[in-house]
Length: 114
Image 1 (tube, rainbow, N blue to C red):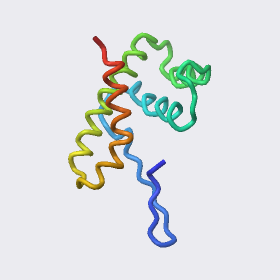
Image 2 (image 1 turned 90 degrees about the vertical axis):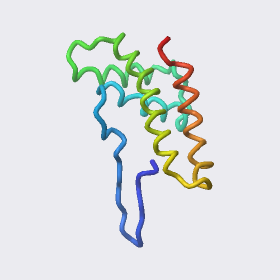
Image 3 (image 1 turned 60 degrees about the vertical axis):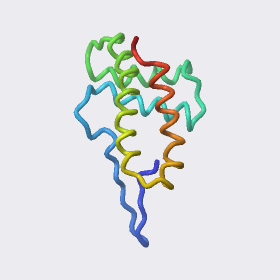
Image 4 (image 1 turned 180 degrees about the vertical axis):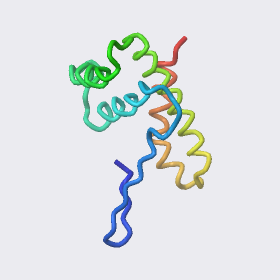
């Protein structure tokens, strides 16, 4: 979503979402956020645990407590990255950007480790 660009009849996909040095568990933060925001799933929907199990299966015997912490820290990391993107935008473009940015900030503050 928002990563397909058209130039005439040519389409290009640009997706740098996970192009970072971070814990691999951070990746599911954005996936889970998308499922809530755009698919309307409640965070306690069984789909989340099924997706989490499928993702963690590749890691052998994963630490589920570490996974939950990574989701919370992933929100903070995403907010920092989005803040840097926001600063590079012209003022008129920030209004549209702030719709998703506001959501990220609220989530990060609500779930930030205490």
